[in-house]
Length: 85
Image 1: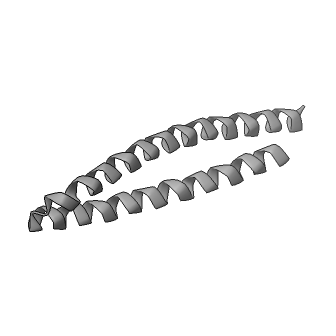
Image 2: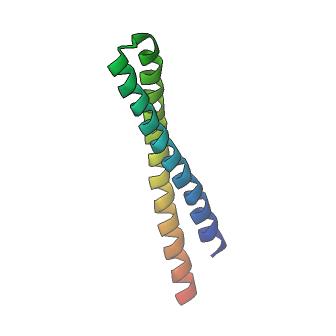
Image 3: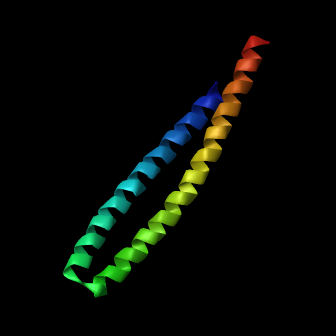
């Protein structure tokens, strides 16, 4: 069960990163919206670039999370098989 617990712990850390990035993207989108209203093109570009960078990072973390989910499931299944045998 040790490996399973370790995998779950790692997955929780990744979930925290996902939630943080999602909130940061939302925050930047609000800034982007305000800059569009103010027609501040000088500051709009860097904010939009930051949003795109965070979206790419979010997609990478989501893929990692999915792989970890598969590893958690396999670990759990293996440990249950070993326990039953």
